[in-house]
Amino acid sequence: MKALTIGKVAKQAGLGVETIRFYERTGLLKEPPRNDSGYRQYPPEAVVKLCFIKKAKQLGFSLKEIEELIALRHKQDATCGDIKAQAEEKIKNIEERIRDLAKMKAALLKLTRRCSDNGPVYECPILTALEPSGEVP
Amino acid sequence: MKALTIGKVAKQAGLGVETIRFYERTGLLKEPPRNDSGYRQYPPEAVVKLCFIKKAKQLGFSLKEIEELIALRHKQDATCGDIKAQAEEKIKNIEERIRDLAKMKAALLKLTRRCSDNGPVYECPILTALEPSGEVP
DNA sequence: CTTGACCCTGTAGAATGGTACAGGGATTAT
DNA sequence: ATAATCCCTGTACCATTCTACAGGGTCAAG
Image (cartoon, rainbow over all chains, first blue to last red; front, side, top):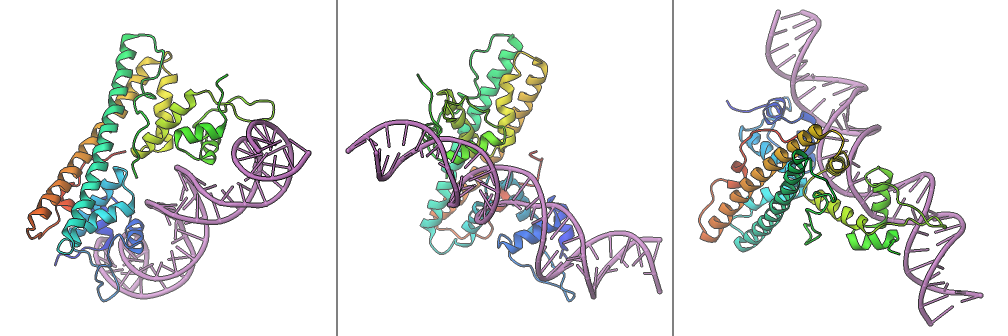
């Protein structure tokens, strides 16, 4: 007796009911079973998955990318090399994001220090923090 | 004699001409001076700014957030305390993003290790990597 | 001095990621 | 048992962030 209604999962995951139905429509979430009156019956794991989706979105992943991320699991026993390559690409992507965020953070710290130093500001450390470099697809 | 046309800055920043005009319309970019025939005349620094915008976008910042980030600079000499507080909030935000990205990376690494081991995968390490936790505003 | 590549404004359309009803059943709380 | 609350489908609409013309002027190379 563990099935949750859409309202319950929505609340637990901190999302809207409409959002979840939207994810289902777009294929990000697979259709759950229904009860006799047509209500969606979610297993508790659905909450974990939705929380993951939420987090990943906040990190700047698109729904498409999130789908790919989740799909890595289901392709497991098929083409292991492919999955690995895909995962490694994501990892590289993530590493670049982290590096850039670190640069941005450093720039902001510099800014706050100057601020407390009351020193003059001849150039903006924020703007020059991220040199134009490799693409993030 | 350093002014650039919109096409030149677009190319150098790796953006489309239309995109730049769009940024101007939305206020992200201030209107540059014009020449006699109404062409936009950009100073070379515009390229730096646009590159920053591009990078920041790739990091998941919205145009609104990017505007705020850039605005930190101009408010410099005015209300120092405010800027500092704002910058520090951004820093916290960035730190959380980095933490979450690090978790995601760890989860993916775990996946790739299992993958190369050719071991069976009974549960998805990706899905469980990010516990439902603090919000990223 | 013409041809092609640029530039201008203005408006329209697209992709992404939702959000909000309307209209109508199902469940639950009092 | 009846009102409040939840669920269903379907469609329409919203913000964000571009992208693509249309219609017309400008500039630079051959």
